[in-house]
Length: 230
Image (cartoon, rainbow, N blue to C red):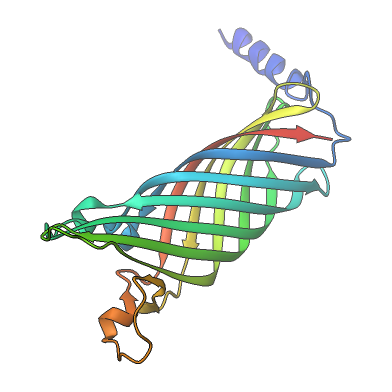
């Protein structure tokens, strides 16, 4: 039994640096990820599961380190219990986040060089937008009201995952990503308000601003992507 175990370990390490599609001369990795994103913490009180799309480009500095750029789009739905608790109104709400980040990635050498687990950190600019449409339900001639609030913040985007080479040029990517955007204001001014209000009318605070129920946004995304290596 001991001899068999030693033979297995020897075979494992003798195969550890073999790979069918690995190419040490690859310098760039470009691809698109798509998946689901789940809001967390206080942000989850008013939003719900959404979609996450992300375009990524990485430049390999060596076999373990890469730097890159990421442009993403997240779209969250509304939490009905939060937004439609008042039966006198029907609300239709969505949240959008556009991350623009610079990334650093560390690849961990595995038993199979085609299998490339990694940890990565993104740092950059996050564009936040929230659009609200509201229709009264207690009138015979309802008039739709709508407004948008938006802001831009600095945030972080750490993630872990793996790439697996499926051909000499293509790789599949699977990753779990955390988005963290701190320092939101207590309230944001409403823009693109409809129906429009006479500028000579003095608005109340609630008419002019949307009060946020969170001071930071956190979310977790699970995505799958296809990448081109060259």
